[in-house]
Amino acid sequence: MSAPFTFHYAATAPVLAARPGERLSVFTEDAFGGRLTTSGGQPRVVAPFPRVNPLTGPIAVEGVKAGDIVAIHVISVAPARDWGVSTVSPNFGALSGTRNNPNLQPAQQEAVWIWRVDGDVVTTETKRGALLRAPLRPFHGCLGVAPPHGEVRHSVVPDVFGGNLDIADVAAGATVYLRANVEGALVHIGDGHYTQGDGELAGTAVEGAMNTELVFGRAAADDDVEWPRIETDREIGVVGCARPLEDAARIASHGLIQWVANLCGLGIPDAHELVSQTCRLRIGNLVNPLYSVAAFIEKRWLPGTPIVSGGMHGQLSRMFL
Image (cartoon, rainbow, N blue to C red):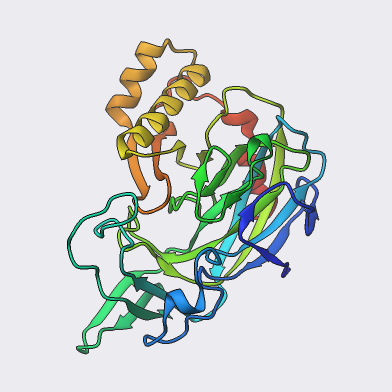
């Protein structure tokens, strides 16, 4: 289903609605609105800030109240086109001087790559004729709900409401748990990535339009769910967003330790020790207004084989096998 695009996470009137357990198909446009189509294109002309990262939504989840936990399960996510685009732009990216981190080095020159989908890889040709290849690993950089306290946040921002997390694990088979701040939660989704390395160092992934299938679930209010949580068949994780990067890592690790302690009936010191010895830290981005880090632990290391989130992930996963 195609819906109007927005460039903000906000508690505005929903453009779509879905019941818990209902399969919903959505189209999302790429970060440049589909307007950057050639290697000679000009990203900041065709998609000048703040009209970047268009979001599909908001989508109201029926029956969800403020304070409830909304579970967003990604059934499938697939390229809607046979091409995607990536860029390097002046004064943008982890290795460039920016407004927040200025330096006196020359700015990078603007460059654009058009990537073609070729089976399970994406490919592009450099100006010198070299072929670049990367794995096709589609996921959504942006997935969030209306922010708390009536805030309106731009589509490039990640925070407690989700948003522009750029965590590659938000792919097919993943369930994301977010606290609803308003009735219906008001889910926004976009920023499809055909592939992206950890950190999104250049400031963009291989950006592409997506066809995505979602199913929603609702869980009771839980004050422990402050930051976004991710569950897959194999792992559970918590996302933290902050600057500097170590604060994002601390938020994610702290949230995971608390989650493990509650799940497994462990004291904080024991949960701290377990997470410290088994966790995986994934850097989502080093370019957004806040950086993002996800801390994961494999379920097989959780003592007692606890049922995570009331079995919500398993229930949603099995609905449309």
